[in-house]
Amino acid sequence: MIQLKDVSKVYENGTVALDHVSIDIGKGEFVFLVGASGAGKSTFIKLLLREELPTAGEIRVAGRNVVTMPRREVPYLRRGLGVIFQDYRLLPDKTVFENVAFAMQVIEAPRRLMQRSVNAVLDVVGLRDKYKCFPRQLSGGEQQRVAIARAIVNDPAIVIADEPTGNLDPETSWDIMEIFERVNRAGTTIVMATHDRNIVDAMKRRVIAIEDGQVVRDEARGGYGYEA
Ligand SMILES: Nc1ncnc2c1ncn2[C@@H]1O[C@H](COP(=O)(O)OP(=O)(O)OP(=O)(O)O)[C@@H](O)[C@H]1O
Image: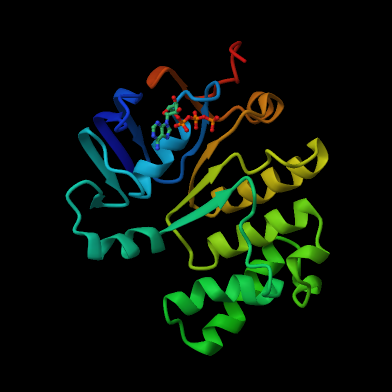
């Protein structure tokens, strides 16, 4: 699903964010990306989305060569990926329903399919009864659940989450992780960058640790490790 071969990323100011990274993530895997602040996790995610290009190396995501892909194909790459951020990034003037439906409007989905799909994913995240609410009327955990609904409504092969529980209390974080587990059980590959030691230690999933731009650990059922 995701393959990086000898990937390096050096930013224009000379910062080496990734240094000869090779990673292979298969279909249906659930992977935690851990590492200290500045280790290179966000850069890794930006490369998968083609928000940045690598300085060297090969990247394949969901069957596409992300490096050589022409610019006009980038939207198709991103449509196959569900992305979730720490700060939710909902549209403030749209309701819960509209926020999720917007992801389907972008791909010009038929209206009837839209209604059905949005209701279905709002059920998955337990927010069907809040469909008329605006983001400001929701708690942080609820807003993140809307963001997850939006990320999965087009049935992506891969969900990429950058610190999705970073702004949430422990209990709410677990609610979010239960949703990710359910999405993963349905076959979706999940890559989640996190600083949440308790979650990583409890879930016993694959852990890829990055330090100074290098993969220093890759364990099938790993823990968060000792670094801060
Ligand atoms: N656009 C940029 N230009 C120059 N340097 C950058 C840029 N983006 C990131 N960096 C640097 O690259 C390195 C890796 O940053 P990155 O954001 O990938 O780390 P991270 O592991 O995601 O950190 P955090 O956990 O704080 O989000 C850091 O040294 C950072 O300062």
